[in-house]
Length: 181
Image (cartoon, rainbow, N blue to C red):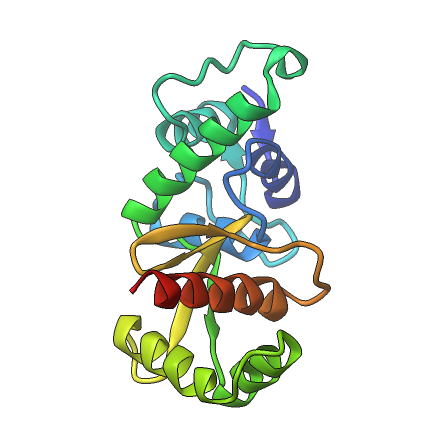
């Protein structure tokens, strides 16, 4: 039987767009979500059997995904549909890569950058506080999208920092929602 170390298993999980953080894999191993052999020493690291890794992958992928399909034959629209379905399945299980803790100062900077009225900062901040589960507004994200107001919003990858990739589409979403009101 073949065994994977954390680095090898992470590359496989990354290929199937299940996680983009090695620490998520380690957390799944520690809490038993993914079965593996604990390290005897720090130097050895976790060992994950091939069967356990593929069972974990199959459990995370939508039922209609065929792992034997050649990826080059799948259209970009089909890939996005599969990715969105997988994203929602993981979101429903509360499996996120991390949370972005939002600061009002950064919201203000992004609103000013978009040349929105300054009173819009307060509106965005109120929306964030109303929709957040935490005392300080936090936005859960996973791979290429984040969750806000019960919606999956794609990151804007034209920005360098993850914070900007989340804040700018979020502000635009809130702006459009305000216009529809």
